[in-house]
Amino acid sequence: MFRNVWIFSVVVMQLALASAAGAHTIITRMSDRQSISMPEMVAAAEKTDLVLVGEVHTNKDHHDLQLDLLRSLNQGRPRLAIGLEMIPATKQRQLDQWSAGRLSEPSMRAVFEESWTDWGLYREIFLFARDHRVPMVALDVPGEVVRKVSQSGFKSLTPKERSYLPVGTSCDLRNPQIALLRKAFAQHFQEKVFNYFCEAQTVRNSGMAINLARYLREHPGHRVAVLTGVWHAVKYAIPEQLARNGSRLSFTVILPETPELNADSAGFAEADYLFDM
Image 1 (spheres, helix red, strand yellow):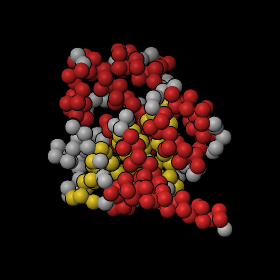
Image 2: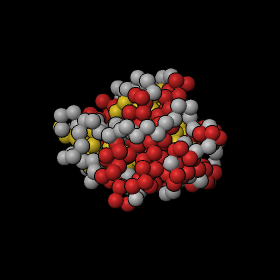
Image 3: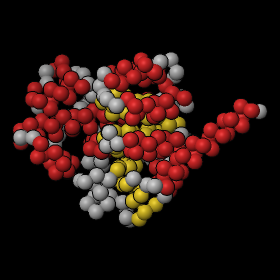
């Protein structure tokens, strides 16, 4: 009986924390520019196959909101899975071991830090997945391929290097996202290098879209919450690449407000919801 009371208390505390976090978050529904509550956004997201939740990688508040959403989405059906930009698809076996409780935290952290930084910002999300046996999906393409594209362009890849990418991965730059990237990043690059940067971003978007579609084909009855940077979650990025590959998956895009994407400058073409904390 004591155990049941303890579990109930933990659940109540988690819900209270989520409500407190949500109370300080301004959420704008982009279809009509109305401010809505966190439960309203969750209820809408639960109707779609994919929920893409963008982040500024170093912003702890964004990760706290992601965790709140994951807790809410894990309450219902279909079964939740968590897609991760931070882990390349070549590390899926280790993620499976982690979600099943068969990999230690130091080992999982070592895998994480092979391709990403700031484990502490993501730790609670990983612990949530492990403790609730929520599958985690490694989405990204190999880092060494991305680095070569960003330095020398997609055409520089050898046939062997292209074989490391999911079948069908492309770097087609006919995409409104390029204008957004130019607004945000072009001043930091020479024109040629900026084009290579855009190619690398598009290769990642394309590869992650293919990996997502494949996971849901192989795991029917799942919904995937995708945790990724703003420039991969925006509708012009992974969602558009899904459409280009003929996917009919439904999706919800939730993005934080940034200087380039905010309630004044962005619209329904970029996101379904914007949040400001």
